[in-house]
Amino acid sequence: MKRVLMAATVPSMIGQFNMENIRLLLNMGYKVDVACDFNDTSVWPKERTQKLKKELAGMDVNCIQLDFSRNPINIKSHISSYRKAVNILKKGKYDFIHTHTPIASSIVRIAAHTAHTKVIYTAHGFHFYEGGPLKNWLLFYPIEKFLSRWTDVLITINKEDYHRAKTRFYAAKTVYIPGVGVDIGKFSVCQINRSQKRRSLGLKEDDFVLLSVGELSERKNQKIVIEALHKMAEKGAIANIVYLVVGRGEMQESLDGLISVYGLKEHVKLAGFRSDIDELCEIADCFVHPSVREGLGIAPLEAMAAGLPMISADVNGIKDYTKDKVTGCCIDPTDVDQMVLAIKKMHEDEDFRKKCIANNLRIAKKFDIRNLKDIMSEIYQGGGYKHLKAVLLRQKKREELGVGLDDFCILSVGELNVNKNHQVIIRALKEMDDLKTKYFIAGKGEQKKKLDKLIKELGLSGKVKLLGFRRDIPELLRASDCFAFPSRREGLGIAAVEAMAAGVPLVTSASGGIKDYCISGITGYLSKKGTAEEYKSLLEQVKNCDEIQPANLKKYSSKFNENCVRKIMQSIYKGI
Image (cartoon, rainbow, N blue to C red; front, top):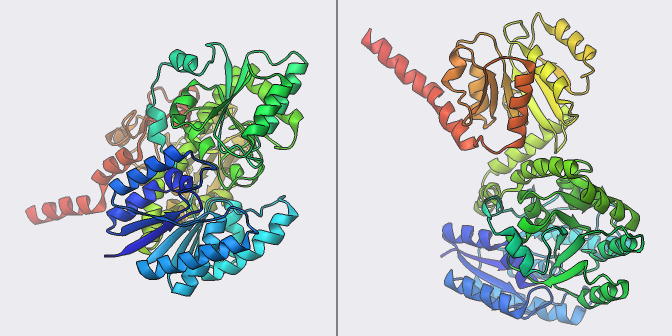
């Protein structure tokens, strides 16, 4: 039987981020063992680790105790861990190892080199990063660079790390995946009694609740929020704001002391370790993630999936999915005054919060764990990474078009003529008054000059672009969020069917053959009046809701598959 070892420094890394990977490996026919320091209680309580071990045992996964020191300069401990790791690898005869966390992965990769075992290493955020401390660069960068030589697949979860690893390291393959996966479904279906849940936590109905989830550490930087609340309290501006901090760690005693000194016991609650994060997101008003360094950050992505606006640090991995005034407030995590302003903005501006919520629900979908399962399956199988390639090609094409992560990209494809009616979408964009919505038209024709003139007259040169004739339509579709097809007359419209096949929802006219496949609420939305105002409403509906499912788009487009048409034509030819 094929065998895999999953390794990490602490059990929380297995329980929080790798259970889906373990299930995936089991389904692929592998026997899986897990090695970590199950005695470590710095992040998880003993009871939670025992529960994890029972869950793994129920999956027929063997748990191996492998002591790791989290102190990077504890050489004696590291040598001991290395020797034990070599024995485990030689005894287990594993096909490969999937290792996580810097210290464990350094030791395990050296051991794997000795035991001639293949290695997949997921870097959950390098300790060296743009603007990071010099000591981190001096200590961790040379180690990671050297050990990349002994890494068969290096997985990075943010773009900064990916670029650095791809251009400067030596791994046989370097792969970017968008995080470790968020169970979007879990956070979208959570339903609780909000008032009752708040009361159980000692919160009032009218409290404005800020929520943070993560280890209590200097890196997670919960301290700056407490300091900001102290400043607000001194000026009598703290109002009904309560900061709920979930997690445990080395900073707990220090934070407790700070809360007492500042007299904030009514406004800051340390909730300890919790397993009901989805329910806590339901009773919170804003999520705060002030880390000074972050690989990506699963907790804030879960909060976004639950529909919370964000106050987040403008640092490495977090920047992959946050943007100031789009997802919330992005701040310097060392600036208390910026944190004060961000808290006030969230507390006082309900319209701003609603706008951020809509954006966050859309952005979080890109990190859905269901997408990552396919990518990890191909990595484990050593396949062609087709799902990963699709993600990377989408990003590359959007960068080429000047489309940002949080932009809403509309595409039309077709001859520039009066019948194709592109001008109505251009006018709809003027009505939307949204700098984050971009419209691209691929095609040539007699209306080019008129459309160019209209774009300039409406002041939309930064939002609408005529691309001319293009041979990269599949790539443009992959980079788009919506396909606009406002034709006044159409036999069928092959471009719109191709968009459906690519999983892109439609906004179309109700003309002729278009009604054969554009079904409101299933594959897109039909404009009955054909006005710019109506198209604006339909485009905003696609932008701000999850109603149109890619599976339905592909299902309906399959009816127009060339093989189906070929069979029909074949029967006609035979019948004649």
